[in-house]
Length: 102
Image (cartoon, rainbow, N blue to C red; front, top):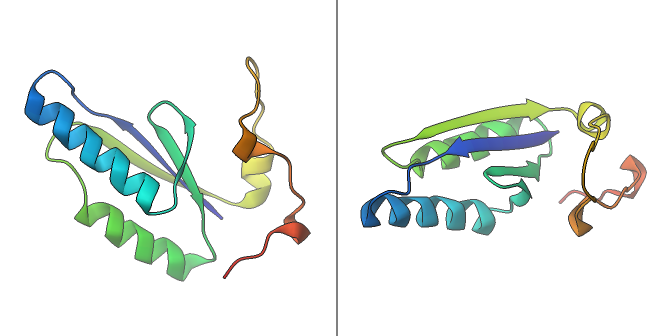
């Protein structure tokens, strides 16, 4: 499974920018990879991991902005089409049998 976090946070004031930076830093430290600007994703190992990371995400939400979470299966994620641009290094195609989850 993949958990994708899509967010739009204000960056007008210094406080807004700090909240944005803290949230983005939390995502990176929690194992999320940037898919696009303001879209981060991570691999999950089942529904228990989804619940665990959802709780961690809720505990680190900023006070303002719009944040959405979408959980998809590996098959659904693999069917995503890249229409313009080049895939990131992290998006190198890997067979499901090559993924090792701890």
